[in-house]
Length: 440
Image 1 (tube, rainbow, N blue to C red):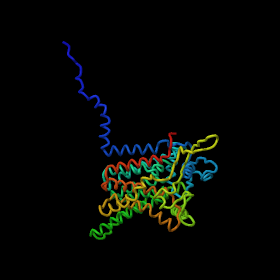
Image 2: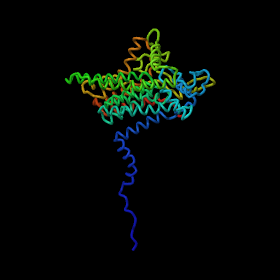
Image 3: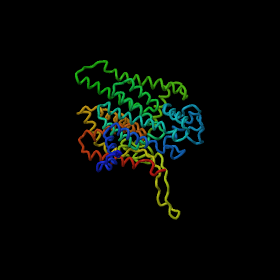
Image 4: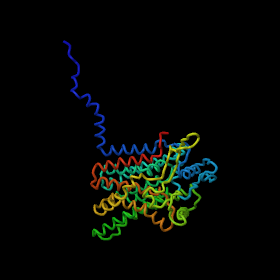
């Protein structure tokens, strides 16, 4: 008698239930903050890398300076009339900033070519490093993985952070080492923190504001130890001395080596003096701007996205009977923050100050100091010396503000519906400012 080798019949509903198993597994995966972080970083990378070379052959915003400087360093020909046309080949013509950032762009162009990928890949990489550094800052400050994921998501999907994370300028390349320096400082790696600030200074002197933030953090720690009755000891200065030593070692030695090869300066001191004089000369007669006719804006205007900067706009016209009746942007790169980010400031900053004071939150303390050190000097410069300032100077504030908003959302007792609603509104704000208004 032959044996029946057929499998037992599946119980009722088992086939239908099996269809939903992938979704169930996905739901289980989304309960793991590390996996959600990976998804956030992947989405952030796609937003920064997609259509990186479009529009083909077109420089965006200050790429006109830095990409052309990289071309000169490489000895490549420039179009007559372009910035730095006629400059000595092999020498960095953009002397108002240290050479390192342009050298990184030049190296990328040497590998990938004189195209959008070559111009912009360093900023994409720096932007991703900055996101990872913010997560490490949150975790090193003692906060949860979920709060870190939220802070990274807010930072990642801010328009200004995304735009500067995909165009060939220096701003993200200086921010990435500064955030790494903050992470090192929170782990008491003082020399490493100083060295990373020094690395940022080789890209742009605005890294000095990151150094200011670290020194204020150290000073607060010293004051806290004194108030706790541990007295005053010379060893309390060790963190500050180590930070400054790291800065001087990397920035001093690095600028000397870079200038010796890629500039006409005989001394890094001369170069620093000229950079400072150049910055001091960027003034506006009559005080800060009161309109948005020019690209510059006052620091207090940044808080409401007043005077957005147009980095690049490509538009198409709709005509009827030979008459233009409408113009639609197909590509629109703007220097502006996600409006939902700015909308939360009025609550997030006071809550961060309160959390730093009453709860002794390390993350809140870092966020408040980092925001102040990277924003208030521009307010002072605008008021005292009529310094010309631009909205993209707000970029270093964005990661700290993102952390402060994450603290507000997760540590203030807000209902889940409010948290979800904010995230949804934030993503809508990101989409509204995304540069590509249609699929190329």
